[in-house]
Length: 502
Image (tube, rainbow, N blue to C red; front, side, top):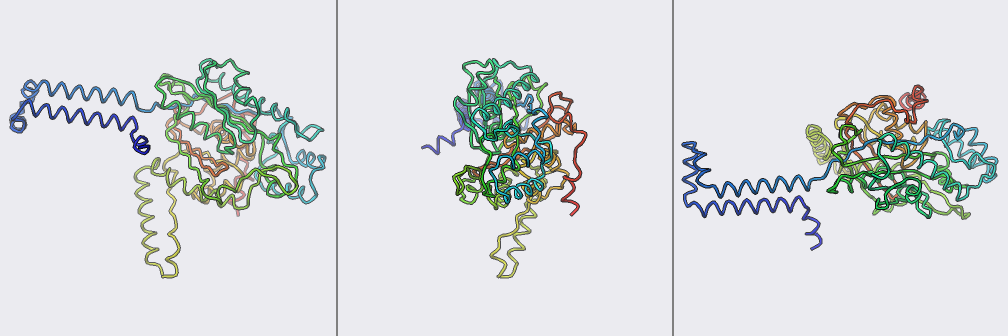
């Protein structure tokens, strides 16, 4: 019974009603005229359409009534278009930049790491793809070196309040008009909640729906957008949804010597983004993008995928986030599984046909292979996603993650330039990272009206999340863009071309 209830969606119920009414109309027509067949033959031969219509007025009116009901039902039940009005990314002050000298100074003065750990973190940092202008929370630059709860709260509130204020100012939407507020933070969940702190800071309505997403990892930004879009697209009234995506470092800096946990100290940095979306068709003229597709695949049922990113204690009782060695392999494998579902939804028919032919060719070659090689599964052919998207925002979880996406998707290094440049400038800010990449595209004025953009991110669990957007206007100058003061320096050739020169 539950399966039947899930299958009877509003659209399917509407279709069933329409066909039932149409069947009833035809039956009524047959009852009113015993010579339906002869009337149709006469119509075809003598073209007496008006005569037939005037003869069977009841049947015609019934058919028109069915059509009208079906049209009104479709218009009232179809999902509403979801539009991104705008977004904003928080950029801290320059005195919070964490270059390698400041990082080494903090590590050594804290006295919490042995020499081997210090050298290991230095090597990871130099290979990570991060530059010298990423941002860190205030406690890194203080003499106390031990973050307290207040440090974490101040870090969260500073980024959230600045990003929300900026996006509301850019879109000229007052807080009273916000219907849905979603705040996502992977590693920090205080009480009162982060959404309550945003509600307390801005004059939202008491009836505003609020949600907190935690422990979603780096997929939090895309997941929050998908959740808000689902709520708005199914709503029958016009509404606005505000997503605030942040990450917290203050209480999650690892003070131990387990190498699998030390990596997170080297790549994660400060960042917060706020995104405002709506289902109001009247705002289409000034909207930035339209959401075309969203897809989340959760691979937690696989033990290997589930355990590659895990918050736990080391042998000394220090809490940290373990990033296991097979993280890159798992990310690549789960991305392949993800795009198997995504590809039929977004690729043009010509590319699907070409991909199907190539896959069939591989299967036939595998079938003709010697007996010793038949046990091997046929190699998966990856379709060319550049035929579906003009731009790609790939989650820059680290240089190795970006390069793994490059290998799996068979992408040229130029496509991944925004990901590598964002990693270099802002580090891995986790959930907000995709919108810092989008800001790179906008700062370079690369997005044109009609362009399609694919955002893909990875999260602990293991989660892969995709968003497909269509640009509704060209990129334009934005005084709030976090790249404004440095965009002329990018791309950094030493970072972008180092792999291609090998």
